[in-house]
Image 1: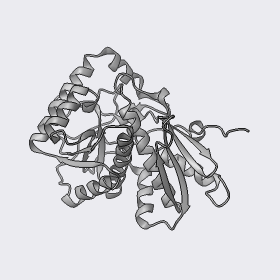
Image 2: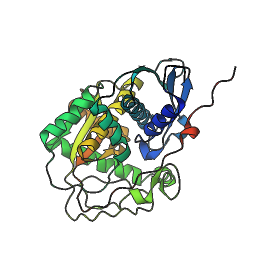
Image 3: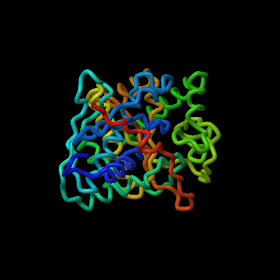
Image 4: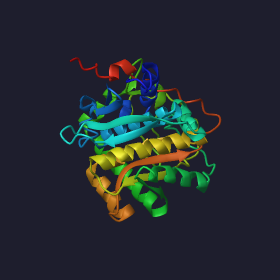
Length: 326
């Protein structure tokens, strides 16, 4: 980058950390461009899921998560980010232009960046140990600071989510094109993207919330009790491209904060991928006051569980556009 800004090694290290962001089916649908004194983020539409995500909502959430990871990683290395979201109306896939200002990293910023390396999507059952209300409040606060709304899903609202999740699972199970798409992006060995078999447990028929039927699941889930996960709904007041991008940033903040605390998390978007079920939850759970963008399972993993292996990531050089040549 330009003189007075991070050197190339620092930028590469930050982009590698940003690439650890969660994405739907671990697609990693983002590209970066280094332009003078800024880092540009673009959505990679070639990695879209036409059956599971026809309106590209999950795709934009994934891009927002990568953007937040980028800011967290730069902050820990002594660079505050100034983010210009959707800077070019003529290029809707140009998600952000990020400029940098030197600053002194705080301990919280360093801890959040460290959480990037050990955050995992844990699809297994969680224990009955209660999550302190203060922890749930902190997750809500971190999301709110990025313009999102978080609600603790309890009682009748939980019943609504369960009903919608089961209905969405039935729709997808009856759709051969959806099943094929899911199989293509899961059960992989040695791939740099997709959901590896080692990261997916076998779905259980009696579970409260149905799990996606990823191909060839190999992750052991020895829990014999029901899942005691707390459920959070992350939503936004609008449902445009900007709102979805901000929701992805807020999702990243919640997941990294939870990882820093020691909580296990798993993002759920399948119930929202069927428009009728998403509208049902918007109407019945929040009275039409906001748009659900994702649900998050939060809880304590059993101490006897084996650590979740890291999912693979594409190399940085594969994700950066070549420099412009005059």
